Length: 410
Image (tube, rainbow, N blue to C red):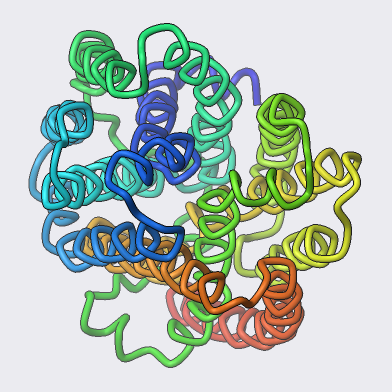
């Protein structure tokens, strides 16, 4: 792992920084200001959830078109455009003084933060690496955990000092004057894909599927039933974190400081998962990712002890570590790399859609009197069912890939 990282430092660091700075458009960061935003715009939990859902749904509808940028422009140029747009989104959030401006700022934050920053990084790693794709994805994706570990505590402290709106101005400045030039300089040299194994032995699909072909594949839709669950559940939990702290009487400092523990767990599991994917394959490991998420949901839905926060963050970190690396390596294994930007833009749009539905649906259920604890129990039951489904999907995909590679070798 160390030798691989040393040889590919500039590209891995560039992808790592893309995922790190995507945090400005992720739910865990935006929801830090949930109470302040609801107070500023006189919104209930459900109303803000609907605002968030509408803005995120709009970003999901646009992402399949914007996502093709990574197929037609260099990674460096695509990154510069995406970071510039994310900067505008941060500035809009700072100055938003009406509901339409709030919706527009969240739309841009979700599209270019959660969506395009991650999409650009993962598409580059999936396309540039074959034999070591698992390691490349795992090293790049830990940027998410870095931002989760640092940003909440840092910007909460900053907002206490200068105000929550002003903290978004600082975020815009960081993106424009640090993220954009550094990432552009790192990515301006395109990496020529190299593999140290024979193409017929590669875990990358020999056939390069187009977007319409992927959308006609039944296994894609079955896999998506599980793949989309972490986006829905994770976003729902983080969006309502203020509510969770309130109903469980947790010290806010305990909760926000535990993000570092989650990030450390995610980092450890992600790197381990990267090695495992290179040893076996993402398809083989597909059934694993729902198990820790199910356990996290059941725990959070049945216990309110302060120690619950610690164990929950460990379980959620384990889930994130598996899924973040697995999803980066899975799609090129199944569908090839030629049209990867186009294919991943659809998948990212679906994940953004799931993350949009989470706050809206759970917020509405809260307004209807259905406790979040009860909702979490049902989420856990769904995860168990999805784990069983992923076992069948994994077998079907492995059979198809074995036939594909056997035909290619012949």
